[in-house]
Length: 95
Ligand SMILES: [Cu+2]
Image (cartoon, rainbow, N blue to C red; front, top):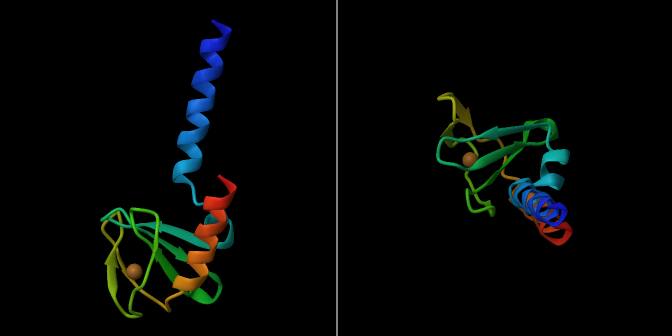
């Protein structure tokens, strides 16, 4: 019985780390979920970077309008793709 419980705990821990971009979330001032499943990180100075729903940093042109999960419009400011890329890389190393 005890062994079974331990397995369940271990499995839920994996599920959490697979979805959380810890380094990126800690560094960003704001994290916005988009309707299409991607995530926008807003860094200091309002500059943004976008992570696709597959967990990769994606290039985006400043000025592009995106739709948030709750239906609001969000205009892309800057394109910190290299910065996000390195944060996501650190996440993949720490998992
Ligand atoms: Cu974008």
